[in-house]
Length: 336
Image (cartoon, rainbow, N blue to C red; front, top):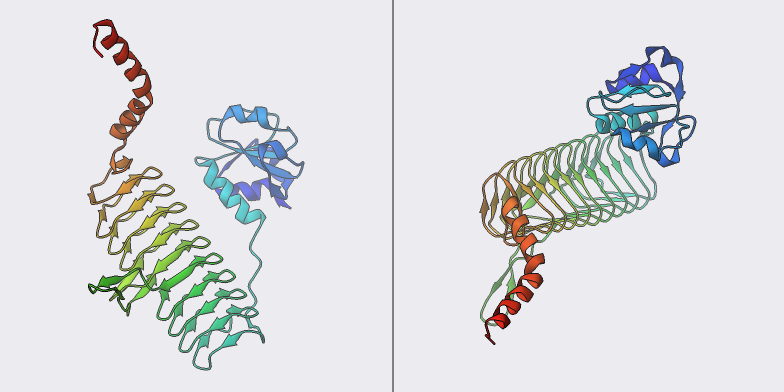
């Protein structure tokens, strides 16, 4: 249990009334699933109608009106809720250990504070940093560098020579460093292009379940610090992804594309090879990028400015009525 005054200080919120500081909470809850020992985040007043009215307190915006419950007023309630989760549900401390059922090469270096679980494999010459956690069934190839505090969930596969910074999280089933889809037609068949590059992942990157990031043909495929990659995303060989990007589910980025910093791609966006997406660009879901995109907000296939795409999409819905009106006009003047 945590006192409200302690929680308010931890999330940077103002407790109203201040006299409610001694009230204690144990967890967070959804508006419709409140418990008497929970705190609930409400982004707008209308959400009060969804509540069961039994929560101990609410996390709310600064302009939220008074209620019969204590309020933790925050400039960004969603961020405040995230911080509250970390306070009320802290991660269990990691105990450094290498399972007897794991396979760690003699030449590998595993920090004493790192953990390697059952049936994980750490290859020749690889380095596992302080506080890293290699979960069951993970395969780490040769000469891989895993930074401090990284977590690789079950059945992640890390190919040879991958380098990752500190605090990287890779979810179950992801594959980092497989060969890219590179072939050259000889006139008789498609000859495989040998990939001798690697993947470099910056600090604080998170990669979702069953995503795949291909190694470079020569050089490195790079995912810069702070970028977050959703489930089932594919990033091709020699792609360069900038800092603090957001790539939503099923995004596909073809080889040698350059993506700037703070780029957001909605679900199922596709980017062709050798394209360039400037920093700060936002792509609506299912947008298709074929070439260079300057900073802006885009949608559609091929990508075009979002307002233009929305207008064209609205017109498509009116084509049936327009056709009927045209037919009526033609009939009225005797045209067939």
